Length: 339
Image 1 (cartoon, rainbow, N blue to C red):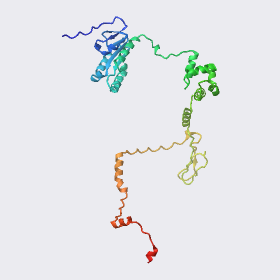
Image 2 (cartoon, one colour):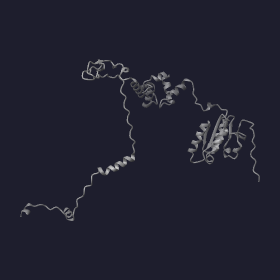
Image 3 (cartoon, rainbow, N blue to C red):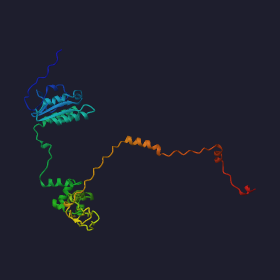
Image 4 (cartoon, rainbow, N blue to C red):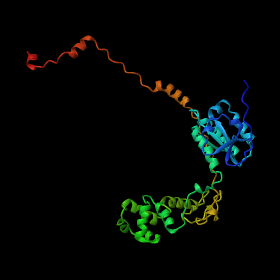
């Protein structure tokens, strides 16, 4: 019995159908593609869901048996499509390592990876890509209205505990955003639905500064660190004839080693830190010794017997002393002893 001939490769006549590669014949996901037509065609991708969108199909169970397959397909696909998609069917239990590896490959090759956990979900993805081929991205964009009431509602609902009903209450009671910002706590508490917590949040939003104490303290500490500290000059005397000056602003005097007349020179002053004498360089700190926990434990085991005091021998008690200690104590009578 001869084998069935492969499906004919045709060039699609209309752009309303999904073009399927002949290699995907027999894939059970084809039965899950609904609401769109499909036809076979000679394409590089497995599914062409748009004129500039190509999709590759991969099962994780097949990927474990043939890990080199998807890399060859990605290399062969190249840059044939503007949008390249890898649709992965997760049909194994341990899938984290495989998906992580495929994600790295897709990031390098500029491919979008989508993971489906059932055939119906995968078919829905394929059909959705074709249905939204010519749709604008406005459907998934955030809708922002430009009128005054919409902007006011968006601004006030950003405050914690404030909902749209509270915004309408504030607008009808005060009329404008400026009057709401200047409202007192008593005026806000008289409104329906405004408790102490909600009133406190509204007042903090309008009255509290944007810069809190933490950032202010950090900025002030950075400014303090950049200001140089004034140094106090010291009077240095040498030999037997030199005398030190006691004044805090006196210049430093250097005396000759022979003990004769001293010659003073102003080396630095407290107001000009740039004229200070150079400080001696600090000696480098010696490196810390390497710590080995096994070596320390061995040393403790060696020193433990020497530091431990010898055990005290227990006294030996014979049977007569043991019986005498257990016997009851007799009462002492002095008259009986004298007789």
